[in-house]
Amino acid sequence: MAEQVKEYECCALFKGDLETEALDAQIKAVSDLLTTRGGHIARTDRWNKRYLAYPIKDYHEGYYVIFRWFSTKELLPDLDYLLKYNEQCLRHLVLDYTEKERKKRKRHGKVQAPQV
Image (cartoon, rainbow, N blue to C red; front, side, top):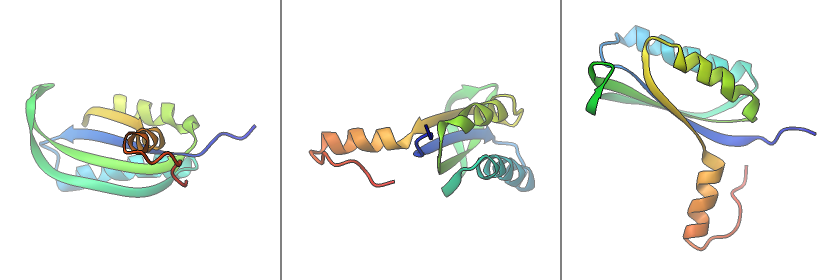
């Protein structure tokens, strides 16, 4: 049985002292992983440097990068491994965006499922 393709979103927080080229390399590494494992990237949002509400690993600033893509859940462990053991990534979170949208539509009275 074929795996279902879903929409996922990943928010990654990178160290605030990264140079532009180093941050670009980190973003490219994640994008390459997603595309080589059969994912299709819908969008990548790169935020400017932001102050953190509290220090994370002694860093007070960081770069947020939001990746949104379509894939099966089979590549999620590889993405988690890449970001968890990356020295430049402070934190990351992966969400099933399909489920998030379904719950939002249900709350607002729109019962129909989103088209993927």
